[in-house]
Amino acid sequence: MKQFLSASDPSDIDELITDAMDLKSKPFRPDLGKGKTLGMVFLNPSLRTRMSTQKAAMSLGMNVINLDIGKDAWKIEFEDGAVMDGGSQEHIKDAVAVMSGYVDILAIRTFAELKDRQLDYQEKVLQDFVRYSSVPIISMESATRHPLQSLADLLTIKEHNLKRPKIAVTWAPHPKALPQAVTNSFLEWSHFIDAEVVLAHPEGYGLAPEFTKGITITHQQEEALEDADFVYAKSWSSYEHYGQLPQVAGNWTVNGKKMELTKKARFMHCLPIRRNVVATDSVIDSSIVLQQAKNREYSAQAVIQQLIKELL
Ligand code: CP
Image 1 (cartoon, protein in one colour):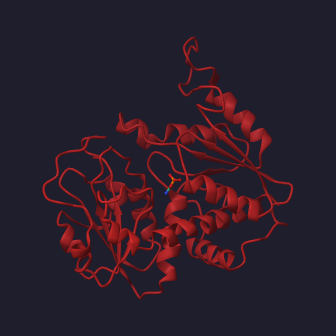
Image 2 (tube, rainbow, N blue to C red):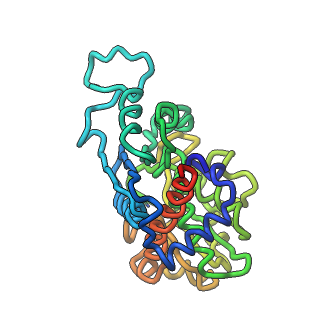
Image 3 (cartoon, rainbow, N blue to C red):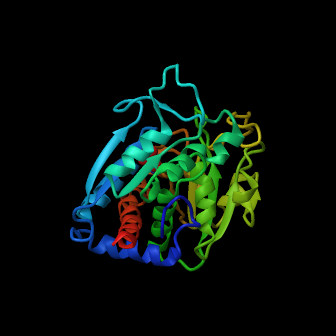
């Protein structure tokens, strides 16, 4: 594996999940990454991704450098050929070339701006990191995907050892417009496990066709939840009316009554979660969200481990 930006990058996703399971039973392997450095660059806030990826690298014996662009560093200019006489002090071209000179692997979190669909779906910022970096890039979430989350999600589902589980992926309400990245990515990765996946969302919240190809879609949340083994809730803003929150009929909050339609389903969410908006307290408190969050550590470690092996 030369980089980790999407499900297309690992040569064998089964092997990556097996590696993550193996690391979970014996995480501390300080010899592999000794003398190597992971750079972690954030253009947006993070709790889980920041801590789990740092811990993963440290368990492999690596040094870690963290940088919050916009807080710790100069303001970056992203436009090619820009006349930089405004507020930005440093061009992405120079910043990435310099950063990658200090580290062996560079991890980057970008985010969808939710203004211009074409711009977000081109992944301009992530692709600039790839273009100007001299070392492998790990995506810690980009405008359209969250592959480290998806790998942790597959690991979590596999740990429950169910034969061809039904996974209901459902849109849920949220007061703010959020990107489609987590759901896009989960749908993309779900093709690599043996599962029946049903996507439920209100009218106006359809996702990009490249991510929903081959996925069963319904506008009836209850229909999706029926006999589900896993319920994965996530809010996202409209792809069609890009970044907007079209009005939704009915109540899409996941509650205990809806969970009764399932086969005692395990409730999943990537976190952070708005309690009693996305799902009720009782649903979250009896869920597997902490297992998912813990598995972020081992999914990151499996990815870093494979990339380090390529460097040796
Ligand atoms: N799930 C997730 O990526 O969480 P953070 O935004 O806190 O990293």
